[in-house]
Amino acid sequence: MWINGGWLKTAKTIERTSPAHGAPLARFAEGGEGEVGAAVAAARAAFDNRSIWSGIPGSERAKAITRWLELIVRDTDRLATIEAEEVGKPIRFAKGETEWAIELGRYAAALAYQIPGDLVNNIGDANLGLVSREPRGVIGMITPWNFPLVTLFQKLPFALAAGCTVVIKPSELTAGTTLEVAALAREAGIPDGVINVVTGSGRTVGEALTGHPGVDMISFTGSTVVGKRIAQRCAEQMKRVGLELGGKAANIVFADADIDSAIDGIAFGYILNQGEECVQGTRLLIEESIADDFIRQLVERSRKIRIGLPDDEQADVGALIHEQHMEKVLGYIRTGVEQGAKLEIGGERLTGDGLGKGYFVAPTIFSGVTPEMTIFREEIFGPVLAVTTFKTVEEAIRLANDTNYGLGNGVWTKDIDKAIQVSRELKSGTVYVNTFLETSVQMPFGGFKDSGLGRENGMDGLLEFTEVKSTFIKLGKRGYALPHTV
Ligand code: NAD
Image (cartoon, rainbow, N blue to C red; front, side):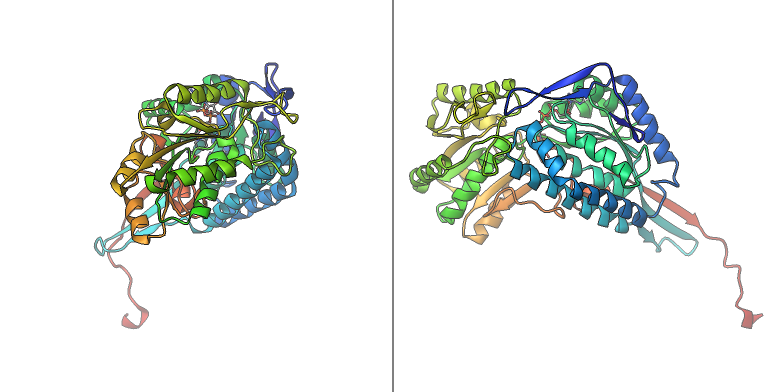
């Protein structure tokens, strides 16, 4: 663990098994309430000492964050290797993820220069109003295993830029890169206590962090079921909360779409990160008149997807996170067959070509899926695509919105009026038009409905880590005189 600028070991540890090789990979300290208490105390002391972080000019925080990012650039290969081995994803995607985390950090550092405020000057000559943004305080960050660095960097540099201090609880399955970047912060001169990491399970460390009265806000990324529990816990203490939760995105493909790019987008959208992706395009809604041909082409494309070990530079898809998760995904596939969907490709565990010890599932496509089926409704978190046909625009919108989730959706058409009108009616925090899983540090990201509360990225992402303060200033009577009037 990393607390107050130093390593802390515990007698109890958590062993991590490699998703791709099925062998022991790492051992992490297993923290509890005591370590959470120590980390929160360190973060609180660092926050309250305004002269080291929360009260210094934003430009100084920006410079410190930038020095830290330079060290992360230096260590990209090492971080990407850890990430690839722990998550089971191909190395080129782990490298891309590390680079994206750095990009998020650069943007957040720049925002530290321009945290907005207002001056209210029309409340009478005797009054002046200041509306300022102050750092929220000590932030507890809880992150998942699928994108350990990116989910962290959608929070951490933004909170740092705002002047907050943090205690991070990474997933017990993928704590490696979080610990590494925390230690790099010290090397970059970010003061001790500003970033702390407590490793351990959600049941102990996670619960202790959400229940700790010294934590001002919880920023969580993970499943909807845990997110709801965290929201309830935070409500007891009126603690601020940001929630980035699950998804069940639909791609709507109209007959007038550019078919080649739609095939690319849909294939990428359902297999990225082995389907362990919150905005995964797990539902394809396809206009009936082009459905048969489109599915045939998509199946052909899926045959070319390369599944491989983390160090396979050409691999498109890696291993699922652990055996139980693989069994859960295979269970959803069996349910799809039992409920009458047609299996077009995949559907099985892969064990050939050196994959036998890992948890690999073939890219899988079901056609003939109807809204009552489990694979249409639940977040599977594996490389499984459910295809449903529609006849009218209204039916497509109704099907896309027929879910409790609302993170992202895609629309594919060359008709710009239709694209914009459909986008307006989709109940999700992000809509992609003629593209999918596009991302930009400037664009806020977050969910409608059960997909979450609040936003990350963009200026909105930084403002989540601030409180608004209104200061009324009563001015005295005009008591001065100009020299020449004396
Ligand atoms: P999870 O909810 O099981 O765990 C997430 C984190 O919460 C882990 O660190 C875990 O230890 C911790 N946790 C578990 N129980 C807790 C408790 N009672 N109190 C406090 N913390 C607790 O999710 P996961 O399996 O790690 O990740 C997959 C989920 O994350 C999927 O549902 C996915 O859609 C979602 N996700 C969402 C986004 C987004 O930006 N919206 C991004 C990535 C992943």
